[in-house]
Length: 253
Ligand code: PGA
Image (cartoon, rainbow, N blue to C red; front, side, top):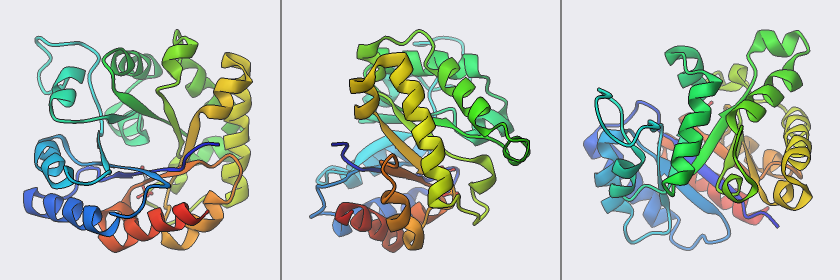
């Protein structure tokens, strides 16, 4: 049985006071929820203050990116050790905004995933097709390719640290959610691929989140899909009542 996992991706939003208020509000609202793993991923600069606001709660802290080198002349980058030093457990890697706005490649994403796991972080590894790719009937091909390249070289022991987030790019921040059936179809395909790569036991234990305009009103139907094990939430994670409602809905599923 896979425990549901809901993560909030705050992206480049909040300021020091609002980040702490959001974290404190979630800590208060979600005190009694232990049927779901919950994480929030604030901007790097607020990690420590959010960690303090979450210290008495079971909500985990995640970062939105990491660099694969341990230290040195990499201006602007943040290492695995630095994140761990800030009480971070999870790290989003390969988010579509980093792939398509910043220009990250599958090869770079693969190095980041390997370094994160080697250093003891739990990657939330994002994959997903563009609208043009879906319309051209290439969804499975694109997503399979991203999964294979992102996880290249990872052994069975290491891959167990990974959560995969399927986020169709056309659904992110657009208000256009994939239907539960569309999400399930791709999630099942990813799990089948994981079965071929790592065997049934590991494929059945790995969690696959859906992301892309997930909100309180569509949480129950998405979470009801057999291969949807959680959500990676952008916009709706910025409001205490919305994100808390989604976690509580997932807890009831
Ligand atoms: P959204 O973002 O929920 O605002 O669509 C999801 C994500 O990009 O992780």
